[in-house]
Length: 542
Figure 1 (cartoon, rainbow, N blue to C red):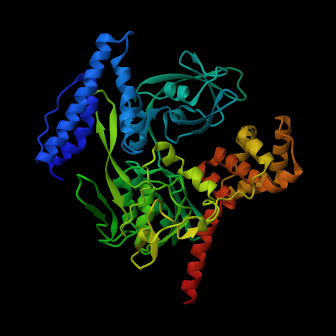
Figure 2: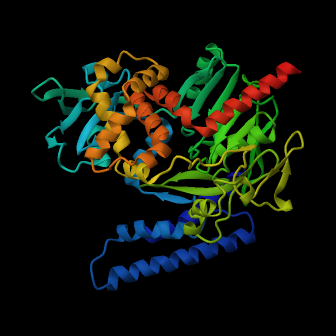
Figure 3: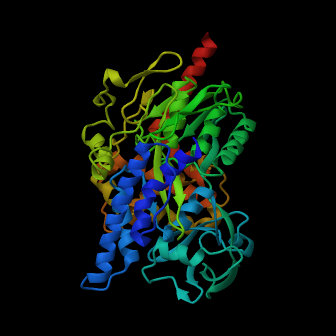
């Protein structure tokens, strides 16, 4: 793309916003008369808005803040475009930047708020808190001069107090079981990694599992490190879990999926009104090209997740299992403003190797767009694959001439219905009250020393089943006002029991413990293991 065209894409939409605040005229060199006319229309519109702002300032009955008017007006302007062109206020930019860069500065603890108390769930290895001896199970009751217990504390308040610039100090008061007094710590904030790979572990002797939470700046390096770990552990086949992954950096997903493709195979291409077609292909034979791979997706897998799944599917390099993905096929560029705010402007659509644009319709507005998932549920799509209807105009072909469809999202090769078989009124009540999570934490806290001797998910299952964890929980729930219903417990008991064991394992040994236990009731993951094993049996028999 030449510089002139790029300037038009970036600055013409911004011109309206700049005019609101200062009435500044931006001189942009345009290439032809049509572009000049377009600029004139934008300038005229901007002048009109500027006039309105001027009239308000001079004549409005009350004193108003021009800055507040502008901040309120910008999102309304961008709503007229598409659901993913958004304005990011300066106050939110730090959090957004931290999420995508993969790190932030803080004290290095994971916490949960229970009974209006900040509970330390885990301490990040190598972080400032671990170095000073803060432990999982500690309660943070004071930060600097502020009491942080029994004052209706929120996650936002805690993060605001604990995070800060690297090298700055924060004083934390800790309540610890076995100590009668508050323990004071003076913590120097440090750089804390914000990992985008949730967990990596071996499901069985030859199957590796890796869950990608999002695609950020450092995700590729984390991903490759995880795959290397699985490779060394003997993984002959891989399950990559992209469920509930909202997407992220295009560059990250291109590099990651290329590891499973042959040199020159297409990953994705983009094209927009002012952006010529741009293709992205594997630059070399991928490290894991030829290895059996399954990709797990669901209705919350979006954007970069759909690029990953689409590239694997269209190139016939693996199997997609789960439910139809979200359907976001738009590419944004982030444009910074002078005051620290920014706009993410949609500049192109992306297309899978077969030519599919999987962007679902947004012509009826934001409420209709995001209400699509509710409609899928109402129409039975989450339970029956046959409820999805495509037209011949949405038909495309993979490398091996298999039929795939566009029209909104990636449809998996193997459909797995959302599992509602274990739902009951009793289960709904304990979930709504958060009792499963609360009891799991309390049990972990009371038995931390003994549980600390356990090292694997299987060991936790054996220990907790031996202690009849489900019975202990129902006794606890009775005291919390949710009386045990034997009929409902027969329906939901297995789910509750497994969740209890998974949460307790997570509290002690981290995400590996949680995922290795919860996999017992994960229908999509179990189907993925079955599909890989079936394929291997067929290969061996041939």
